[in-house]
Structures are given as C-alpha cells and as structure tokens.
Image (cartoon, rainbow, N blue to C red; front, side):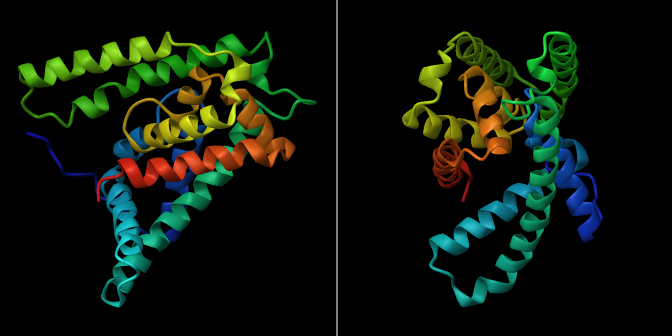
Amino acid sequence: EIKMSEKSETRTWPNIFSFGLLMGAADAVPGVSGGTVALIIGIYQKFISSISTCLDFIKNLFPSESKSVFFSAFNFLFLLGCGMLCSYYIVTKILIGPEDSPGLLRQDTTGPYIFSFFFGLVLFSIKEPWNLVSTPNFKHYFLAAVGVLIVFIYTNFTLEESSGDSKAMLIVGGILALTAMLLPGVSGALVLLTLGQYHSIASSFHGGGLEPLIYLILGGIIGLFTFVPF
C-alpha cells in the first residue's frame, strides 16, 4: 500500500519559484533528482498531476471546459520551471562552465570532493521513496533488487564521449534524463554523466552551442509524452 499524503505547501508564487530553484539545483548535479526534492518538500503529486493535466489538455485538442484547470496547472509549472532554469544555469556555470573557463567539477583539485558530496546526497535520498511503502512485502523487496540490478548494469555501461554526442544518443539521453528528472531517484545529470554527455551539454548550455541542446530537448519531449502518466 502506498501512502499518498504529502506535506502541505503554500502555493504563492515566491514559494513555487523557490521550490523550482531547489529542484533545478538537484537536476543540475549528478546526484538526486528534482523529483526526489519535490517528494521531500511535499509537492511531488502536485508536480506530476500538473504535467498530466497539461498533457491531457493538449492531447484532447484544447477543450474549452478544461481551460481553467489547465491554466492553473500551467501557472504552477511555469513558475516552477523558471526557478529550475535559473538555478540550473547558476549551478552548471559553477560546476562545469564554458570550455574557456572550466568549473569546479572539471578541476582535479576540487572535482573529487564535490563528487563525494553528491554521493552523500544520493545516500540520504534513498529512504524517501521507500518511506512511501507503508507495508513492505516480498514483491517490494524483489522490485527494489531489480532496480539495483538495472542501475548496476546501466552505470557500468559506459560510452565514449564521441559516441555520446551523436544525434541519436542525444535524443536517447534526453528521454532518459527527463524520465530521471521526474522520478524520485537519480538526477538527469547523473544519467547524462553515465552516457558521456553531461560535460558537453552543460558546456553547450553556457557556450551557445544550440544543436546538442535541440536534440536533447527533442528527446525530453518524447520522454514527457511517453512516460508521464495521463
């Protein structure tokens, strides 16, 4: 049985924007996902239901009777997205930076310490999704073991940086990263890091290289319409 209750939140625009700042910062680093942060601060169900509402509105060809619900969900996601973009830009600027000014993660003196900190964040976040399972049984433990196995295989399947930058792999990276961002667990940045795309994408984001970002966003849109529950 899954506990669906969430922490109460005040839905004023400064609070929603600040929630977006936290989620964007999480998705910018190879560690916990923005979905995990949303779960911790108590807006995860609102976040997912708002996305589903907007997708349903588009899928049903903009029905007039659903406009008020759509705009309410859209306003929430817009404020959240603005916060996420702001913090994503700032955090990746500090950690990765452009090619001519590498960030902390790309420096031998600071990179290992920051990755150690991210590892601690991942360890702390493990309990949050599991806390939603009120009465664990064999099936839950079995699925947890399957998840561990999948992640183990996935994280040991490394790709060369050159192959990670191909158009097809950028689309695949966008699909997987967007899915990871939405779900409680690892961040989209960690997925991109495993695929060999994290540094190049972050550098393109700050250096003005639009082509890799376009293919990544295309993959994200595919993932959004494919994996978000309607």
